Length: 302
Image 1: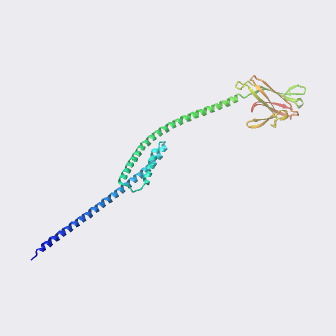
Image 2: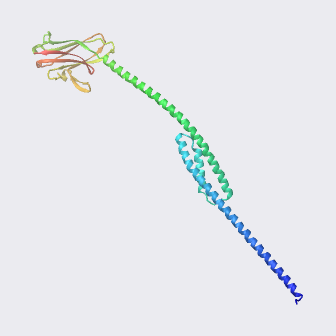
């Protein structure tokens, strides 16, 4: 048979058990919610890291694309300052710490969108620059063709001018004609070729300068060469002989005089005193003006 105190003990135990149960449940709930909180925080951290990694990869790709655009636009002659500025900003962002808040990452994403938009704008600009360069290439090629034609015309004109100058120079060369080669003895008597040595005190050479409507009236240096059968030129510096150039080669002349060519078919006369006997044979008389041959004649000494 129970006593009155037993119900009281039983009630007290139930209260204790209930309180303990409540405490256990509350503690379990706290542990659960704390765990869930850690899980959420960890998930958020992972998401932030993934967002940052993805955004940094985009920045790296944009940086590489900027390099290509800078090279291409510079080659096309466009302005690359804006691209260089964006490139510098990206490099600065990539050097910063990888620890960033979600807010900082969102700001970085906004910048990435801006850079992507800049690349799209530059794509359009590149196409326009290509068109402009294509037009310039066509114009330059046309201009070069015109320039080449003009250069060819100038060269042809220059060639024609040179040819005309050559023809004029040739046409203006004086011609010697009507040669007379006489032997003059010590009494002044003149004889025509052939001569004997005793008849030659002096050699008299005469010829006429033919009319030439192209040749200008000007001073001329006239030279004669007396050449023997052995192709030796009669030469004596004491008697007025000297040298001159023929076809870039220095040659001797026997005698020379300076005249004023007046285009009047003037008669030129030379007297040459050898001072010794002539070797018998046929001699050639050559008449020159400046550095070209005007005419020739021959005489014989017996």
